[in-house]
Amino acid sequence: MLKNKYIYYLSIVIGGAIAIYANASEQQNTLILILGIVFLMFGIFKIQSTIPSKKEKETFVESEPFEDEEE
Image 1: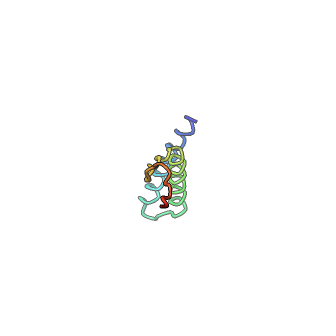
Image 2: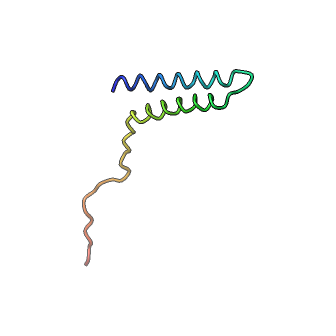
Image 3: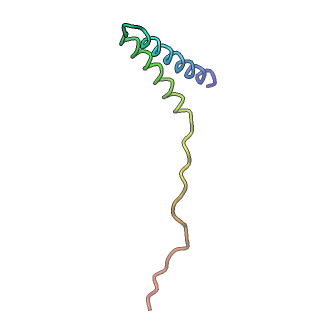
């Protein structure tokens, strides 16, 4: 599991570097730019999936059962 985490961070860095490289040249190579973005998004998606979601708070108040008063 720990190795996978480093692989995901590495894919983010590699994807960002590829995207910057493809964007920095005079003739922009769209295929390389897309490949860099794919690496970047893959790493971000996988890292995001390992982060646990926040537990939502209960908004209602629990109380004793309400009894109908019939007089």
